[in-house]
Amino acid sequence: MLTDAALRSLKPKNKLYKISDRDGMYVTVQPSGTVVFRFDYRLNDRRETLTLGRYGSAGLSLARAREALIDAKRLIAEGRSPAQEKQRDKRRLKEAKSFGEFGERWLKEAKMADSTRAMRRSVFERDILPTFRNRLLSEISADDLRMRCATVKDRGAPATAVHVRDIVKLIYAFAILHGEKVANPADEVGPSSIATFVPRDRSLLPSEIRIMLNQLEHVATLPTIRLGVKMFLLTMVRKSELQGNRAIGTACLILACCVKTRA
Figure 1 (cartoon, rainbow, N blue to C red):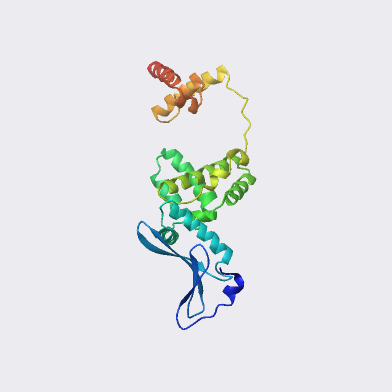
Figure 2 (cartoon, helix red, strand yellow):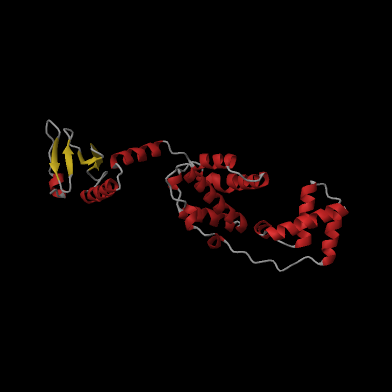
C-alpha cells in the first residue's frame, strides 16, 4: 500500500512503470518523473482505465485520490462508466456557454408577454448583465446573487432586486432544461430575504371609481385594455385571483360585456 513518503521517493526510469496501492488503484511513474493515479475496472464486459489525476501539490494528494476512487466505484455500481463521465465533464466545460449567452437565449425563446419580455430585458441588461455577463453558469453562487440583489436594493429599488433574483432563477431553469448540469443559485435566495413589502391600505372611493370609469372612455388605448381596466374596477379582484378562479373569471367576462354594451 502506498504512502505519501513512498510516493515522494519514487524515481523515474527509462520506461513507464506501475506501483500498486489498494482497492485496485495504482500509480504510473513516467520517464519524466510525473506520477499519475489510475484505476482499471470492467463494465459491461469491457475493460476501461480511469485516470484519476496527477500526484503533487498542483494535483491530487493520496487521500484525495482515494476519495476519487470511492466516487468512481459508486458510478460503476450504478452501471455508469467513470471514464466516460469524466470525458463528458471535460467536454461540457469546454463547450460551456456564459450566463450572458443563456440569458439572451432565454429572453428570445421563453414564452412570455411582450410587455413582460421588455420589462425583464430592461432589468437583465441594467442590473444583471454587467456583473454576470462573462461568467459560466457554474461560477455564479448563491452569495454572488445575494450580493447583486443587495446592491440593487441599496440604491432604493427593492422590487427590482426581487426581479433580479426571479430572472436569474428563470435563466438557470431554462439552462437546466436544455441539458446544463448546474445548481440554480436562486433556489438558496428566497424573495423574502431580499425585500418584504407592506400591503397598501388605501382603496378607491366609489366616487373615484366613477370618475375613472368615465375618464377611461377618453384614454387612447386598445379596447381590450380599456375593458380589462373596467373589469378590475368593477370586480376588485387581483390578476392572480382572476386567473385562479374560473367562476370569478366568468363573472368578470359577463360584467365586461355589459360595460361594453353600455358603452
